[in-house]
Image 1 (tube, rainbow, N blue to C red):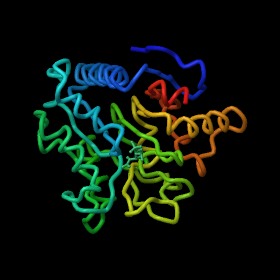
Image 2 (image 1 turned 60 degrees about the vertical axis):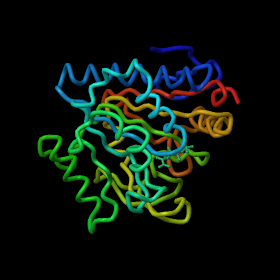
Image 3 (image 1 turned 90 degrees about the vertical axis):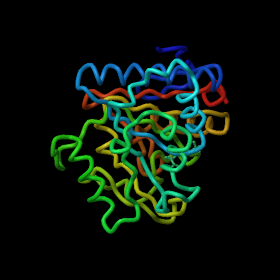
Length: 259
Ligand code: 6PG
């Protein structure tokens, strides 16, 4: 479903603009279920990675409540987490807590197919990479697993996942996940998927709603049109699954697209 194309914003990949968040969630939901069905037809399972943040929470609830998603193939779906705060799973800042409460507790996903980031174990990076490796036939870096669908958000500073401007995890190219903290990382410390893992995905969707994000989108457009990606300052400009045949789609409501 490729609704209205934005004439106002030139961003890499597809730019899908919906009139309001209701329509936006419908369009994203259709794309998601289509992607899940295709993955299952072709490979028997669907690897989905979800973000935290305020924007996707009502979308997750929509997936539970809207009868159109009743047939979503949860039993064949693996749920990975794009990024996580280093807090326990019952802390209100935890992404997995929000994702479980808004979505996963209400759908028939297999508990063994839900993969929270193990932020509090001794070596979280090694642990999560082993989980990914086990789910992808023993694959090891430098090879990279190909997740089917990664849902990202974007902060006002153009961070995505927990890849914040000028932060250490941005430079990690030999791992699939990394820890991240520093002056410009909003506390608490984070764990995040790295650029190599995100950019290896078949589909990457960036969900952005509200006029408050418009100026950041304009900044990104201006940077890409004038000098190309500035990954250090505008981390989301490092998202580019196209070289390996992946697809990037920006899901914007009219307020985000037009200000
Ligand atoms: C997180 C996210 C992060 C988020 C953006 C946007 O855990 O915070 O994964 O990258 O997507 O900060 O957040 P909002 O949707 O709340 O604006």
